[in-house]
Image (tube, rainbow, N blue to C red):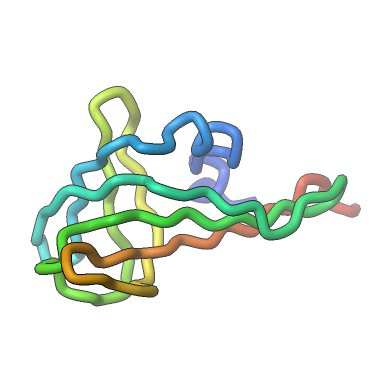
Length: 106
């Protein structure tokens, strides 16, 4: 596991942050607000965990995938890869997908 992955919050930590607002900074330097609106468990067993996060942002935000820095008032900033996945008249939605091996086989 790399240092960057080791520093990311776990699924349980993210679940406690549902409906939390983040200040987001794009690689371009643009900043906007995002709200964590969904955590979906895709796979979970004794060896592997796979989940996704869905963030709601204003529809005016460019729909560009990339690495974004997210900061909340009560948490350390984190960098995650976000992909635009849908939109409606008022919002754009970005998704982040996480895959964790719980145990490494030697």
